Length: 175
Image (cartoon, one colour):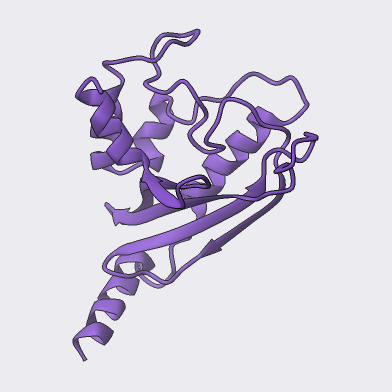
């Protein structure tokens, strides 16, 4: 009975008054930017962590960790990012993203997991070119709107899940 109450409370947290919030909305915005970044259209690179996106797409805890990690910029052109790779494709190189799918799991303990899968190397001749990349966005309700609280990638080599918040904490410690 307690589990049912938790699920109902979690759903209410995402429902607003009279309508369900789209828990995939912040993920869609990030994936559109990422898709555009790797498209063959020569458009300017979209920073998924620019101030305007940090302000409305990510949780307060995520933003605090990002800002702490940003004190230790990676070697890059603008000198402000704590990352020297694209955290969504989990690498420095990719092709235009193909076969992108997105699925939201039910809210559990106040967190909805939105799973995104895509092929990032389809234009390559590498043996793993047809493999899918899977990214899990953990979405929470904050102030009545869904926001990304963590981005978790699957490490193909170790079969482990890598939390971006944990990575940012290590960067902030200078590791």
